[in-house]
Image (cartoon, rainbow, N blue to C red; front, top):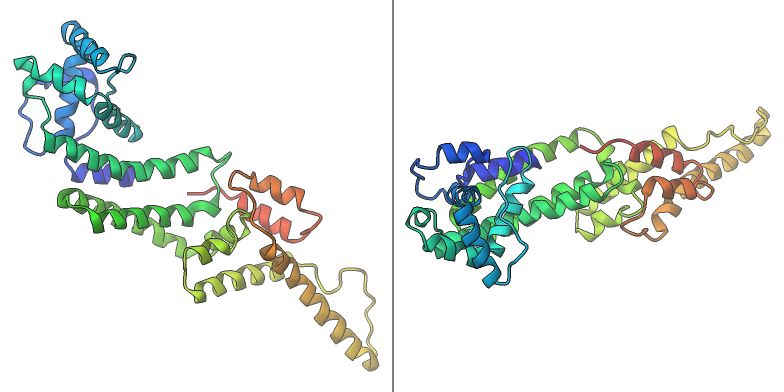
Length: 312
């Protein structure tokens, strides 16, 4: 996600996050038109670096009932910090505007109404990634099963933004991000691991694809793939149970019936799993398979194998 967000920020002329010292050293450089975030950074640094401006800003913040909040400057290694910087600036807009307008040296960094509205638009895009990041970071461990759902969530939300946005520059930047996401997303087609892991996640199962209106042909493919891998690698073999090898022709019908029934039971372990209700969103899915080993002794091995793979 970091690479995608950085691409979007680059397209909207956000510039790279810099240290406070670097910004101060270049504070007098002309800010090109349209570079709103670099302009905001300079305003923040100018206020934070001067005891006089800092005190004036604190008084304005207190007057606006914003006491206790401080301005944030983003850092290069953490894109979330750009979101946090913009969010805090919007929270403290009243104090920022009042402070900037009261001094001629700060006035050149003052943001107008259109620029603040643009920041709100940028925030609405970044919040999509923040939501996805919270889901990933809340997991006890990165897992393969949520890779497809996260990609789809991001792409769907960003495409929806582009369809509705009146800010063409930001929409075009978001389209660059969507193309980057698509580049990574298509790589999930190179292996069936992602699809299988999603189905074996007891919080998702086939229901994820059904709820999100995937094509019936893909849902059928997903189920058949799980069954195929299960039967090939995890289902008990036909000789399990210490059956004697009976060679008499008169027993062929019996053996056919027995092995046919056994195959059906093998498939039923998958069918039974798919029919059981999905578990809670916060469920530890590896622990879920461990506690359900008695119900799904063979499928549990497959579940643990696939869900233990680290997501990318």
